[in-house]
Image (tube, rainbow, N blue to C red; front, side, top):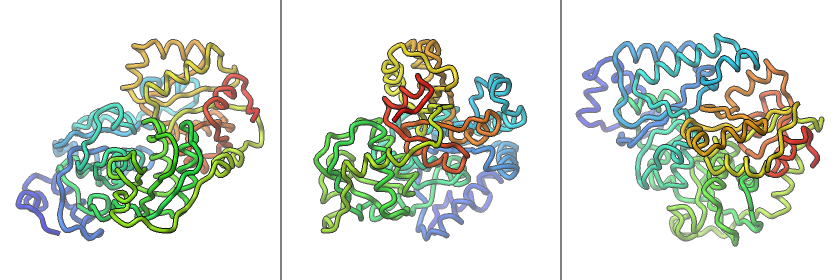
Length: 416
């Protein structure tokens, strides 16, 4: 790999042990993937998962802090493992251990000491700052990364925790994968012959298409005669594609920035073969998702976190109906949306109806812990990613459109 003089100096230790670790990590990563150079990044997005990182992660963050390391680009934090603002309630009501909460608090303290902004969001592109087309980024949340690539035309790979952390400290990342124009061109054609109407529909469409050809190198191009999705629909679509297919990039002809035309999405020649998704395919996704028992412990809206518009729609569509006494209604949001909801009176209205926010989290990281401590089992959601990620967490999950989810929250039962 060809390094600049400054980058070589960091690799040689001129910037101290912390920057040397960061440059060595990204240099090794780049060599593994055959990168020819580093590219400067406009921002970084770091997911410091306390549970997954364990003691090695804790020691690394402590090492970096002890050597006065600081981020050199705007650097955002992914959701926490727990709602820190409700820590006492989580311990008293949900039985979450003080040790677990203390460990997550310490992780976040280390990150703030390094200069990461306490955004606790997986939708930083929506609630913090949207990336510009052509920006190189080092974003570690897969949903945020695919959104940056496809929805904004920025350039990032799915950064692991250490590589996103390293890039934030040295301001550059190896140029491979989605940083290279040739890897961003479409190579699989999907025609949509139905009319996806809401967030759950777009998630289901992504779940179907994501499994057609699983893999990071697959770049799907969607086209057809349908109404363009709203931003929140497209957000769910992107996150679900990353979850079900491991895709870091897609194009929606006439909608996303690198797909002004079908030909542009493919970089020239449109392939003759195409996959088709019908209304029957879409409906079958929901029909297959059932629970053994129709009683509902939880209705969760998360993965990704909700925008202020999604929160407002849920409160309005509850239309004054109270959540059933045996059911929890949980909305995962980031602190930025929480502030807006507070100011708009939505927090108070939701609480009066028996719903609650989980702020700075996205539910699925803490889902296994909550399953163990509360005994919750039956869950209903409109989130494609949440359905996919909870498959191994011990929950019995039903995937439904928004109206059905809200009816389940109010009645405590899944009727359809």
